[in-house]
Amino acid sequence: MSAVSEILETEGLTTILETTDFGQWHHSVAGNLGHHTSALLSPVEGFKATMRLGHVAGLQVLHLKGAGALEMIREQCDSVVVWLPLQGISEEEVNGQALLSEPGTAMVFTPGDHLHGRTSLEMEGVSILIPTDALPGWKRSAPPPLLRSGRGEQAVLAAARVVATAAATPGSGSGFASEQLKNSLLQWSLFHSDQAPKERITAVRRRRLINQAREWMETHGSRPFTVVELSEAVGASIRQLQYSFQDELGCSPMAEAKRQRLHRLRGQLLDRSQNHLSIAELMEQSGLLACGVTAADYRSLFGELPRQTRRRSLVA
Image (cartoon, rainbow, N blue to C red; front, side, top):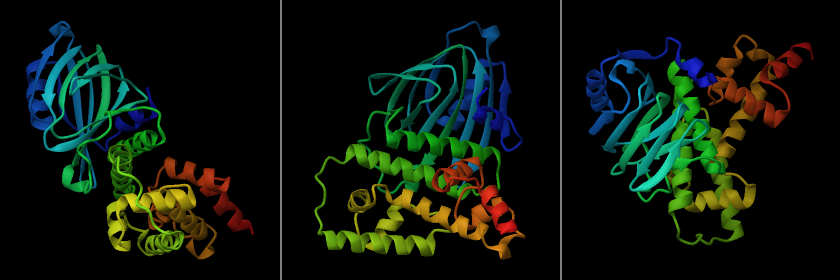
């Protein structure tokens, strides 16, 4: 069982279906995931399914688990869906393109996609439903839906796991988990679907733009925000903003926002007047998700865990 699977078994999610009746499952899926037709490919007496529901700052998270090989034909309707497989495989045809979904990958379905899938006998995964109006600037002509190994793809995968974790452990800064996933999806989509050449600006204008963006982040970084909001605040297109940060700093705008937040956290950990607050509380005050992912990011940047920084501040 994966770490995400173990977390999803906690009390944070609500069980909305637990059945061995294929017809009941079919009806419930139609109510939660939209129009589809399904067929059970394995013996009916071996079928069982569980569906658990959670929410993360406007996103709907469905934990699906069961036994029984299925065939499903469906059309993606109102939401962008990130499917994060945790156990088993499914052979998917997305708009006629054959793909294999398995643990360690993810798939992104957008409204209008035509899907035809066949699953293995044992399946478990997470569907994250994101309203399209929560993704301003989303490109319909998105890249192939299978996410596996690219840097942008890995960012979406990591963010989806954090959202699943946040759904199962409510009250741990879920707004920042939602922000992270939406921004990673937007950047992934824009990177692949925007084939226009770079918007050329002078080096002086580029540095001024970055300074404006970093100052805005310093002021607003303790709350969730999207790359669209940032671009509007500094009067630049998303593409121009991304290219400027990549050229000057070698990272995306949201990666720089996370770096600022981690530095803010370090300052608070070293501040003895903040010792009455837990590390989790300081993470949330800094605009970070209070979880192990943040601790790992902190260690990657500073070479020690947050608790080690706090311990050193107490004995200094």
